[in-house]
Length: 537
Image 1 (cartoon, rainbow, N blue to C red):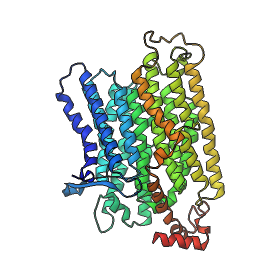
Image 2 (tube, helix red, strand yellow; image 1 turned 180 degrees about the vertical axis):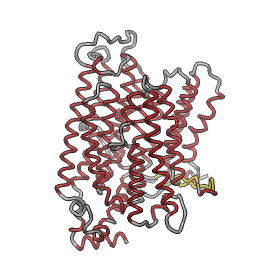
Image 3 (tube, rainbow, N blue to C red; image 1 turned 30 degrees about the horizontal axis):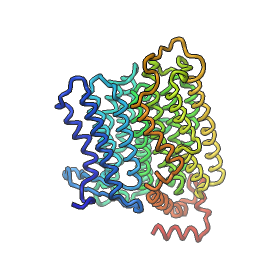
Image 4 (tube, rainbow, N blue to C red; image 1 turned 45 degrees about the horizontal axis):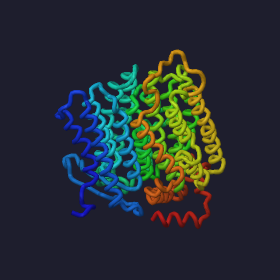
């Protein structure tokens, strides 16, 4: 059998799910066998996707690859349709890495270990399904399946207020999912043909008002997951109460599902509506950056401060998607990958610190850098990456977003200046609250209330390995960004080109629109306008 003919993607999605179903029959009393089993499955699945992509994926193609399509429930038009392209492939690898490390990070879980590792594997499978689904109804099913394990992982293995945090999470995300279903069915029934195929939906022609409403619906649904202000309030509570492995997956993968869906659905499928919403995304991105940074200052809980930092960093994704430039959209994707690695490392180290200190309140810590020097060094490296220190991946992603919006010829100079300056304020605030966090936790006099483990106060080899596995790609991408960008550059060029093609047409049809003073497309030279129109034809 030819390597390309093997159903790689189906195998990648099915392996964790099938393995999870087998957990109840594994003979194990103390959970030791189950944890080795869960880790082995995760490693095998990660190795499977690496082998498939390394051996057969064409990095110079922007088309879908490894396409698999089977009729599943023909009565409702549901197909098992999966494929991978430059947009989904790096996020698939990110999902594999972080889920594998999260399962390794959960090595000390003794409360209901069968259920815990079973939920982790089911969630792993559903996340892969979200990134690979090419049928809108299949995408929705995978999106919904992923919610249940997250809810249970928070509500059973979380902190003191875990039930409140888990309930808030499920209410927000389940309510947002309704918008996916309604908008998806509206697109499926629109026109002469009924289909859930994402590529076919993207080729349909929709009335302007209809497309704007569908775009708004998707924006709300995916904005909750990203999250976008003011739909973000579930995130600090969920992070504050989730266990370290849960927080790693929340920050490392779940938020990226929102960013991925915005590109796949809102920009690729609804480019005419994106013309009107792009300035809104840029403004919301600025709000996320400044608001998230300011709120982070007010947090005394270590994980809640990092949660608000995640909200701020996701603002750069929105600005990049609004830029209409190749470098801006490429920067948005790189920011998602980079933040996934950085946030996972910081939340894992927060869990390591909590195991030793038994508190997440920074005002009750202090001076632990003297007795936990390796933890201090690793935490400092993660914080430097998060504040976009040159030489680390966070710097490259944010710089590309700034270049993308600054060089965009779609917006007026005054609009770009405001966006860049306000975003820069957030960039300045980030090192202040992160360095303040390091000072409160690791410097100064040790709190009298703090009782560190006298036997093993610092990181163990397992914890060092997990952190190093995240920090190495952070530094590698920072020093040589092409390690990541070569996987999706061809695709982001196509996305930016496709999105720009509708600009002259919309601008000429709506010269008195609300954004006529923001977009400079109506003032482009006639030759440029005609050239872009001819490309769109």
